[in-house]
Image (cartoon, rainbow, N blue to C red):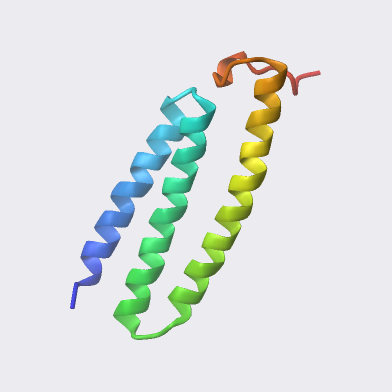
Length: 100
C-alpha cells in the first residue's frame, strides 16, 4: 500500500504548479488549465485520505469535484470564446470589457 505522504506530496506539487500558473501566466487558456490542475490536486489528496482511512467518502467527494469541474469547463470555455469574439486575443491583460 502506498503511504499517504506520497499522495500528499504529489498533490502539493500539482497545487503549487497550478497556483504559479494562475499567478504568472497571462494567457486565459493557461490560467484556466491551471485552475483545473489545482482541482485535480485536491482530488488526489481526497483519494489519498480515502485510501488511508479505508472509507469511500473521498471517492464520493472526488466525483463531486469532477462534476463541478466539468460544469466549470463548460462555463469557462463559453466565457473565453465570447471574449475572443469581441477582441481576438486570449491575453488577460488586454481584456478590459468588464470595467466601467
